[in-house]
Amino acid sequence: MKTLLLIDANSIIHRSFHALPSLTSKDGKPVQAIYGLSSIFLKLFRENKPDYAAALFDRPEPTFRKEKYAEYKAQRPKAPDELVQQIIEARNFFPAFGIKAFEKPGFEADDLIATLAEKFKNEPDVQVVILTGDRDTLQLVEGEKVVVRTFKTGISDTITYDERAVIEKYSLRPNQLIDYKALVGDQSDNIKGVPGIGPKTAVAVLNRFGTLEDAYNHLSDDSKLEARLKPFRKDAFLAKELVTLERNAPIELGGIESLKLNYTENEVKKFFAEMGFEALLRRLENGILPQKAKPNTPPTLF
Image (cartoon, rainbow, N blue to C red; front, side, top):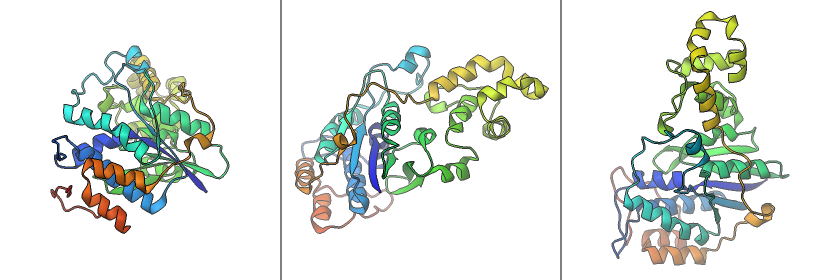
């Protein structure tokens, strides 16, 4: 089976930035996030190079969610300049690995991932693998056809979630995670959900009723649950609307062959040389996978 790799670029760059100590290139530019990104993909391509790939980026403009809910992500601090510089530099990283990049004003990277996953999930003999630094895209998992690969700790150890793994982890089906977040909220995105409804209660409600809609349609069956949910119906359905990924974002691309990986080691070597990543150059030339760094040990650049 061939693989289509959909990359949540911003989340992985953020994760690399915070996972590694501060690093600068010879000309003084911050590079730890790009170094982490390079290490991740060098290892990934050595293990199992994908057949098709796309990197999806967030845009700085307000999204459609911000238009619906002004407080969406309002609590997040401004990204440091060192991180912003490396997000910009990542636009050069992905072409070096033969990966096309996409972004769309008004939409988040996760919406673009959802759109591409929806478009290509029925391609015969192709598995869609979403590579991300968080778990917001777990709602897209379908059987073993669409899976999410994310990180356990740091940027080295990963775990892959197919539908069975999601159910084992959360006691819910992937598509129920939308309703779950609608009930408990999402603090990282400043989405409130229903006050007083925690994870255990949300799972119990969804295991009993299946969906948020059915739970509200049967509130009269349970007076205690009605007292907790009824006053916050508007909040719950707004939260569901906000956490649901858009599967029809307007991305201009052709068939899956338009995402065919165009990877050559020479281009990667050129990029590593320009960035001063001599340790990664040696690993690439020697066919050695990146080694796990000891805690608090900065990677070797030169």
